[in-house]
Image 1 (cartoon, rainbow, N blue to C red):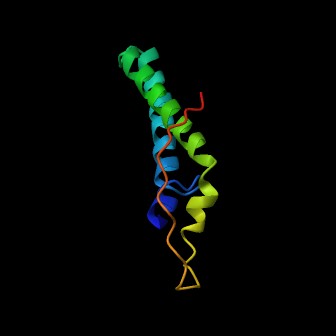
Image 2: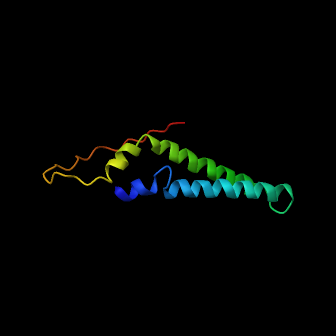
Length: 93
């Protein structure tokens, strides 16, 4: 869980960095497409990818507290592990 907290950290995590990279690539591709050096489809695909990555980050925001708590080591050794729960998929769109 601690690894996931680092990956999904909204400021310094890999997801945030990759989202920024995709958005920057989209802006660069837009410039290239307007000059006729790159296909507009490439620009649009990069823009969609950046938007999807951003949406994933927003979907995970409600769970950041849980992920951050995983970084803190437990001080009690007798804590019972959490019970498994059925998985429920919720879409926020």
